[in-house]
Image (cartoon, rainbow, N blue to C red; front, side, top):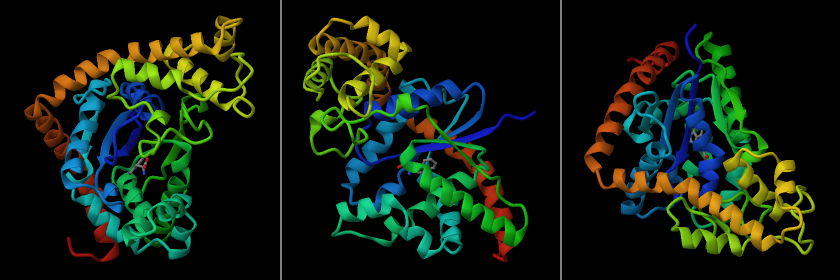
Length: 330
Ligand code: TRP
Protein backbone atom coordinates (compact mmCIF):
# COMPACT_ATOMS: atom_id res chain seq x y z
CA UNK A 1 0.00 0.00 0.00
CA UNK A 2 1.33 3.43 -0.81
CA UNK A 3 1.90 5.87 1.99
CA UNK A 4 -0.67 8.49 2.85
CA UNK A 5 0.13 11.99 1.69
CA UNK A 6 0.59 14.84 4.13
CA UNK A 7 0.82 18.50 3.24
CA UNK A 8 1.36 21.43 5.52
CA UNK A 9 3.03 24.80 5.57
CA UNK A 10 3.90 27.87 7.54
CA UNK A 11 3.60 31.44 6.33
CA UNK A 12 6.80 33.32 5.70
CA UNK A 13 5.65 36.28 7.73
CA UNK A 14 7.68 36.95 10.87
CA UNK A 15 10.15 34.86 12.83
CA UNK A 16 9.26 31.35 13.90
CA UNK A 17 8.31 30.75 17.50
CA UNK A 18 8.48 27.98 20.04
CA UNK A 19 4.78 27.52 19.25
CA UNK A 20 5.56 26.82 15.59
CA UNK A 21 8.20 24.34 16.64
CA UNK A 22 6.37 22.39 19.36
CA UNK A 23 2.97 22.72 17.71
CA UNK A 24 3.95 21.95 14.14
CA UNK A 25 7.50 21.26 13.00
CA UNK A 26 8.39 18.83 15.78
CA UNK A 27 5.32 16.78 14.89
CA UNK A 28 6.17 16.86 11.21
CA UNK A 29 9.56 15.40 12.04
CA UNK A 30 7.84 12.53 13.80
CA UNK A 31 5.66 11.84 10.74
CA UNK A 32 8.34 11.75 8.09
CA UNK A 33 8.87 7.98 8.21
CA UNK A 34 5.26 6.96 8.09
CA UNK A 35 3.89 9.35 5.47
CA UNK A 36 4.75 10.85 2.14
CA UNK A 37 5.18 14.44 3.29
CA UNK A 38 5.09 17.77 1.50
CA UNK A 39 6.11 20.75 3.59
CA UNK A 40 6.09 24.20 2.12
CA UNK A 41 6.81 27.76 3.03
CA UNK A 42 3.70 29.75 2.18
CA UNK A 43 5.33 32.91 0.89
CA UNK A 44 2.45 33.77 -1.46
CA UNK A 45 0.13 33.82 1.52
CA UNK A 46 2.50 36.29 3.13
CA UNK A 47 1.62 38.89 0.52
CA UNK A 48 -1.80 39.33 2.09
CA UNK A 49 -0.13 41.69 4.56
CA UNK A 50 2.57 44.25 3.74
CA UNK A 51 6.12 43.00 4.02
CA UNK A 52 9.47 44.56 3.50
CA UNK A 53 10.72 42.69 0.37
CA UNK A 54 14.16 41.94 1.79
CA UNK A 55 12.64 40.68 5.04
CA UNK A 56 10.18 38.45 3.22
CA UNK A 57 13.00 36.89 1.22
CA UNK A 58 15.11 36.34 4.33
CA UNK A 59 12.23 34.93 6.33
CA UNK A 60 11.49 32.44 3.59
CA UNK A 61 15.04 31.11 3.72
CA UNK A 62 15.13 31.20 7.50
CA UNK A 63 12.05 29.03 7.74
CA UNK A 64 13.56 26.59 5.30
CA UNK A 65 16.71 26.50 7.44
CA UNK A 66 14.63 25.88 10.57
CA UNK A 67 12.76 23.03 8.89
CA UNK A 68 16.04 21.29 8.15
CA UNK A 69 17.71 22.17 11.45
CA UNK A 70 14.71 20.83 13.36
CA UNK A 71 15.14 17.48 11.67
CA UNK A 72 13.05 17.45 8.51
CA UNK A 73 15.11 15.39 6.13
CA UNK A 74 15.10 16.82 2.59
CA UNK A 75 15.72 13.32 1.27
CA UNK A 76 12.63 11.91 2.93
CA UNK A 77 10.27 14.88 2.52
CA UNK A 78 9.45 17.23 -0.29
CA UNK A 79 10.36 20.62 1.15
CA UNK A 80 9.62 23.57 -1.08
CA UNK A 81 8.76 27.23 -1.44
CA UNK A 82 5.16 27.80 -2.54
CA UNK A 83 5.97 30.50 -5.10
CA UNK A 84 8.40 28.20 -6.90
CA UNK A 85 5.64 25.84 -7.88
CA UNK A 86 3.52 28.02 -10.15
CA UNK A 87 0.67 25.53 -10.05
CA UNK A 88 -0.34 26.97 -6.66
CA UNK A 89 -1.16 30.38 -8.08
CA UNK A 90 -2.88 28.83 -11.08
CA UNK A 91 -5.09 26.42 -9.17
CA UNK A 92 -5.65 29.18 -6.60
CA UNK A 93 -7.24 31.31 -9.30
CA UNK A 94 -9.35 28.46 -10.60
CA UNK A 95 -10.59 27.64 -7.10
CA UNK A 96 -11.40 31.33 -6.51
CA UNK A 97 -14.08 30.77 -9.12
CA UNK A 98 -15.51 27.85 -7.15
CA UNK A 99 -15.57 29.62 -3.79
CA UNK A 100 -18.42 31.85 -2.67
CA UNK A 101 -18.13 35.31 -1.19
CA UNK A 102 -20.53 34.22 1.54
CA UNK A 103 -18.26 31.36 2.59
CA UNK A 104 -15.19 33.53 2.60
CA UNK A 105 -16.81 36.26 4.65
CA UNK A 106 -17.48 33.77 7.44
CA UNK A 107 -13.78 33.04 7.95
CA UNK A 108 -12.72 34.17 11.41
CA UNK A 109 -9.10 34.65 10.35
CA UNK A 110 -10.25 37.07 7.66
CA UNK A 111 -12.33 39.00 10.17
CA UNK A 112 -9.44 39.12 12.65
CA UNK A 113 -6.87 40.17 10.10
CA UNK A 114 -9.18 42.71 8.51
CA UNK A 115 -9.64 44.29 11.93
CA UNK A 116 -5.91 44.26 12.53
CA UNK A 117 -4.96 45.67 9.13
CA UNK A 118 -7.90 47.97 8.55
CA UNK A 119 -5.89 50.06 6.09
CA UNK A 120 -5.13 47.07 3.86
CA UNK A 121 -8.14 44.80 3.52
CA UNK A 122 -7.07 43.48 0.14
CA UNK A 123 -8.74 40.91 -2.08
CA UNK A 124 -5.96 38.41 -1.40
CA UNK A 125 -6.67 38.51 2.30
CA UNK A 126 -10.25 37.64 1.45
CA UNK A 127 -9.50 34.80 -0.98
CA UNK A 128 -6.61 33.43 1.11
CA UNK A 129 -8.52 30.18 1.87
CA UNK A 130 -8.92 29.36 -1.83
CA UNK A 131 -5.15 29.52 -2.27
CA UNK A 132 -4.72 27.34 0.79
CA UNK A 133 -7.22 24.89 -0.71
CA UNK A 134 -5.08 24.82 -3.85
CA UNK A 135 -1.97 24.10 -1.75
CA UNK A 136 -3.67 21.08 -0.26
CA UNK A 137 -5.64 19.74 -3.24
CA UNK A 138 -2.73 19.95 -5.70
CA UNK A 139 -0.99 17.16 -3.80
CA UNK A 140 -4.12 15.06 -3.21
CA UNK A 141 -3.22 15.24 0.46
CA UNK A 142 -4.97 12.80 2.78
CA UNK A 143 -3.93 14.53 5.96
CA UNK A 144 -3.23 18.16 6.76
CA UNK A 145 -1.64 18.82 10.14
CA UNK A 146 -2.85 22.22 11.28
CA UNK A 147 -3.54 24.13 14.44
CA UNK A 148 -7.09 24.61 15.58
CA UNK A 149 -7.09 28.12 14.17
CA UNK A 150 -6.74 26.68 10.66
CA UNK A 151 -9.53 24.11 10.92
CA UNK A 152 -12.03 26.49 9.36
CA UNK A 153 -9.77 26.79 6.32
CA UNK A 154 -9.61 23.05 6.12
CA UNK A 155 -13.38 22.80 6.23
CA UNK A 156 -13.72 25.24 3.35
CA UNK A 157 -11.10 23.25 1.44
CA UNK A 158 -13.25 20.18 1.85
CA UNK A 159 -16.34 22.09 0.73
CA UNK A 160 -14.54 23.34 -2.38
CA UNK A 161 -13.22 19.87 -3.18
CA UNK A 162 -16.62 18.32 -2.75
CA UNK A 163 -18.28 20.98 -4.90
CA UNK A 164 -15.73 20.44 -7.66
CA UNK A 165 -16.00 16.65 -7.49
CA UNK A 166 -19.78 16.86 -7.73
CA UNK A 167 -19.61 19.06 -10.80
CA UNK A 168 -16.87 17.25 -12.69
CA UNK A 169 -16.56 13.78 -11.17
CA UNK A 170 -13.90 12.50 -8.75
CA UNK A 171 -10.96 14.87 -9.04
CA UNK A 172 -9.67 15.76 -5.61
CA UNK A 173 -8.92 13.54 -2.66
CA UNK A 174 -10.90 14.69 0.37
CA UNK A 175 -8.33 15.92 2.91
CA UNK A 176 -8.71 15.38 6.63
CA UNK A 177 -7.54 17.84 9.24
CA UNK A 178 -5.01 16.43 11.62
CA UNK A 179 -5.23 18.60 14.67
CA UNK A 180 -2.31 18.09 16.93
CA UNK A 181 -2.98 16.96 20.42
CA UNK A 182 -3.98 19.90 22.57
CA UNK A 183 -0.82 19.60 24.60
CA UNK A 184 1.09 21.12 21.72
CA UNK A 185 -1.01 24.25 21.54
CA UNK A 186 1.37 26.82 22.93
CA UNK A 187 -0.05 30.04 24.27
CA UNK A 188 1.54 33.43 24.86
CA UNK A 189 3.69 33.86 27.98
CA UNK A 190 2.15 37.23 28.79
CA UNK A 191 -1.35 36.50 27.57
CA UNK A 192 -1.88 32.75 28.02
CA UNK A 193 -5.41 33.03 26.64
CA UNK A 194 -4.07 33.76 23.16
CA UNK A 195 -2.00 31.50 20.94
CA UNK A 196 1.73 32.33 20.97
CA UNK A 197 1.97 34.45 17.86
CA UNK A 198 4.95 35.52 15.80
CA UNK A 199 3.23 38.86 15.23
CA UNK A 200 2.82 39.56 18.95
CA UNK A 201 3.53 43.19 19.84
CA UNK A 202 4.79 42.34 23.33
CA UNK A 203 8.07 40.53 22.70
CA UNK A 204 7.98 38.95 26.16
CA UNK A 205 4.89 37.06 25.04
CA UNK A 206 6.76 34.90 22.58
CA UNK A 207 9.88 32.75 22.45
CA UNK A 208 11.47 33.01 19.03
CA UNK A 209 13.45 30.03 17.86
CA UNK A 210 16.37 32.39 17.34
CA UNK A 211 16.33 33.73 20.92
CA UNK A 212 19.59 33.40 22.82
CA UNK A 213 19.53 31.31 26.04
CA UNK A 214 19.65 34.35 28.36
CA UNK A 215 16.72 35.92 26.52
CA UNK A 216 14.73 32.70 26.77
CA UNK A 217 15.38 32.49 30.50
CA UNK A 218 14.39 36.11 31.01
CA UNK A 219 11.14 35.67 29.09
CA UNK A 220 10.16 32.59 31.06
CA UNK A 221 10.98 34.33 34.34
CA UNK A 222 8.54 37.09 33.35
CA UNK A 223 5.80 34.69 32.26
CA UNK A 224 2.39 35.45 33.72
CA UNK A 225 1.19 32.92 36.29
CA UNK A 226 -1.22 33.33 39.22
CA UNK A 227 -1.09 33.91 42.94
CA UNK A 228 -1.49 30.29 44.04
CA UNK A 229 2.12 29.27 43.81
CA UNK A 230 1.06 25.71 43.00
CA UNK A 231 2.06 23.86 39.84
CA UNK A 232 -1.24 22.32 38.85
CA UNK A 233 -2.79 21.76 35.43
CA UNK A 234 -6.03 23.62 34.81
CA UNK A 235 -6.10 25.64 31.58
CA UNK A 236 -9.32 27.41 32.63
CA UNK A 237 -8.38 28.71 36.03
CA UNK A 238 -4.58 28.59 35.68
CA UNK A 239 -3.87 29.33 32.00
CA UNK A 240 -0.35 30.67 32.55
CA UNK A 241 0.94 27.80 34.67
CA UNK A 242 -0.86 25.24 32.48
CA UNK A 243 0.78 26.66 29.38
CA UNK A 244 4.23 26.39 30.98
CA UNK A 245 3.37 22.82 31.91
CA UNK A 246 2.38 22.08 28.33
CA UNK A 247 5.65 23.43 27.04
CA UNK A 248 7.53 21.35 29.59
CA UNK A 249 5.47 18.29 28.79
CA UNK A 250 5.98 18.64 25.02
CA UNK A 251 9.72 18.72 25.52
CA UNK A 252 10.18 16.12 28.24
CA UNK A 253 7.24 13.85 27.29
CA UNK A 254 6.26 13.88 30.96
CA UNK A 255 2.56 13.76 31.80
CA UNK A 256 0.84 16.58 33.65
CA UNK A 257 0.61 14.39 36.72
CA UNK A 258 4.31 13.69 36.66
CA UNK A 259 5.02 17.38 36.32
CA UNK A 260 2.71 18.27 39.20
CA UNK A 261 4.55 15.75 41.33
CA UNK A 262 7.97 16.95 40.26
CA UNK A 263 7.20 20.49 41.40
CA UNK A 264 5.16 19.74 44.48
CA UNK A 265 6.23 22.17 47.18
CA UNK A 266 8.37 24.19 44.76
CA UNK A 267 7.63 27.81 43.96
CA UNK A 268 6.94 29.20 40.51
CA UNK A 269 10.45 30.68 40.32
CA UNK A 270 12.03 27.27 40.38
CA UNK A 271 9.44 25.85 37.98
CA UNK A 272 9.93 28.64 35.44
CA UNK A 273 13.69 28.16 35.50
CA UNK A 274 13.29 24.43 34.87
CA UNK A 275 10.96 25.03 31.94
CA UNK A 276 13.36 27.60 30.49
CA UNK A 277 16.29 25.21 30.86
CA UNK A 278 14.40 22.43 29.11
CA UNK A 279 13.58 24.76 26.22
CA UNK A 280 17.13 26.07 25.99
CA UNK A 281 18.54 22.56 25.96
CA UNK A 282 16.08 21.40 23.31
CA UNK A 283 16.74 24.40 21.07
CA UNK A 284 20.50 24.48 21.40
CA UNK A 285 21.42 21.86 18.76
CA UNK A 286 18.70 23.18 16.46
CA UNK A 287 20.00 26.74 16.74
CA UNK A 288 23.54 25.58 16.06
CA UNK A 289 22.53 23.68 12.96
CA UNK A 290 20.28 26.53 11.87
CA UNK A 291 23.19 28.98 11.91
CA UNK A 292 25.36 26.60 9.91
CA UNK A 293 22.68 26.12 7.30
CA UNK A 294 21.94 29.82 6.98
CA UNK A 295 25.63 30.40 6.39
CA UNK A 296 25.44 28.10 3.40
CA UNK A 297 23.04 29.68 0.89
CA UNK A 298 24.15 27.26 -1.84
CA UNK A 299 22.96 24.32 0.22
CA UNK A 300 19.62 26.04 0.84
CA UNK A 301 19.23 26.75 -2.85
CA UNK A 302 19.95 23.14 -3.69
CA UNK A 303 17.26 21.99 -1.30
CA UNK A 304 14.53 24.32 -2.45
CA UNK A 305 15.31 23.77 -6.11
CA UNK A 306 15.11 20.03 -5.72
CA UNK A 307 12.01 20.33 -3.57
CA UNK A 308 10.18 22.46 -6.12
CA UNK A 309 11.07 20.07 -8.91
CA UNK A 310 9.72 17.15 -6.99
CA UNK A 311 6.57 19.02 -5.87
CA UNK A 312 5.85 20.14 -9.41
CA UNK A 313 5.51 16.54 -10.62
CA UNK A 314 2.41 15.85 -8.60
CA UNK A 315 1.12 19.43 -8.72
CA UNK A 316 1.21 19.67 -12.51
CA UNK A 317 -0.48 16.32 -12.88
CA UNK A 318 -3.39 17.48 -10.72
CA UNK A 319 -3.59 20.87 -12.38
CA UNK A 320 -3.70 19.36 -15.86
CA UNK A 321 -6.47 17.04 -14.84
CA UNK A 322 -8.43 19.99 -13.43
CA UNK A 323 -7.94 22.06 -16.57
CA UNK A 324 -9.08 19.26 -18.80
CA UNK A 325 -12.21 18.79 -16.76
CA UNK A 326 -13.24 22.42 -16.84
CA UNK A 327 -12.38 23.13 -20.48
CA UNK A 328 -9.18 25.13 -20.10
CA UNK A 329 -6.74 24.31 -22.91
CA UNK A 330 -3.62 22.86 -21.35
N1 TRP B 1 -2.65 29.28 6.55
C1 TRP B 1 -1.66 28.52 7.27
C2 TRP B 1 -1.28 29.26 8.54
O1 TRP B 1 -1.35 30.46 8.60
C3 TRP B 1 -0.44 28.31 6.42
C4 TRP B 1 -0.76 27.50 5.20
C5 TRP B 1 -0.81 27.93 3.92
C6 TRP B 1 -1.11 26.12 5.21
N2 TRP B 1 -1.15 26.91 3.10
C7 TRP B 1 -1.35 25.78 3.84
C8 TRP B 1 -1.24 25.15 6.20
C9 TRP B 1 -1.73 24.49 3.48
C10 TRP B 1 -1.63 23.87 5.84
C11 TRP B 1 -1.88 23.54 4.48
O2 TRP B 1 -0.88 28.61 9.48
